[in-house]
Length: 199
Image (tube, rainbow, N blue to C red; front, side):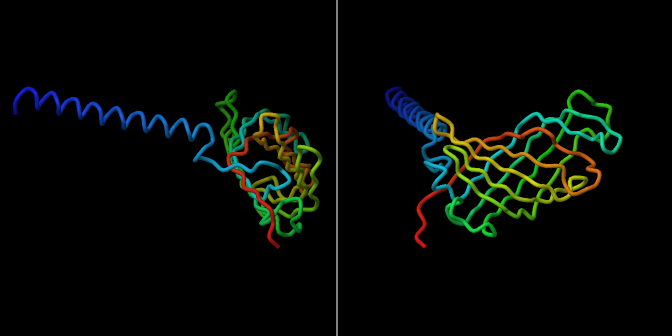
């Protein structure tokens, strides 16, 4: 192969490589800006379903069983499906599930400092929309010492247009409660779907 063909081949290879790199960067930027990546509804009024992550610092109160107040970091996932616009859904149509891990960085010696909880059997009792906050009250069952507990779920629309997620639990049905999360837990809405009902 003569030198001119080698140079043309190298130039073509370099050009193709640059096009591929620019294409990958372009797609990454588009997804990062919310185009072609996660779906997002434009309002809480039209919200039908959503899912996201939990990531927060919480306190638990275990004094009712001889324990103490402890600090944990919570990381997990949640899903909400109203099967139609949440504000118009019948209470028995609303499904909510979540699971999270709890861990304590400051206490490495405690054998039970890191653990997880799964939640199921959600039963909604009330749905309200007050300005930019959608609130869903209900009961949910949690694993281990949590039992069946009152829960309040909030989705809030921020001024930037994105949504955030919070939940707060009550003392539960166990008497005395073995462990109660006494702080509101926050997270993020990763994906949300909305739209007008046809029925």
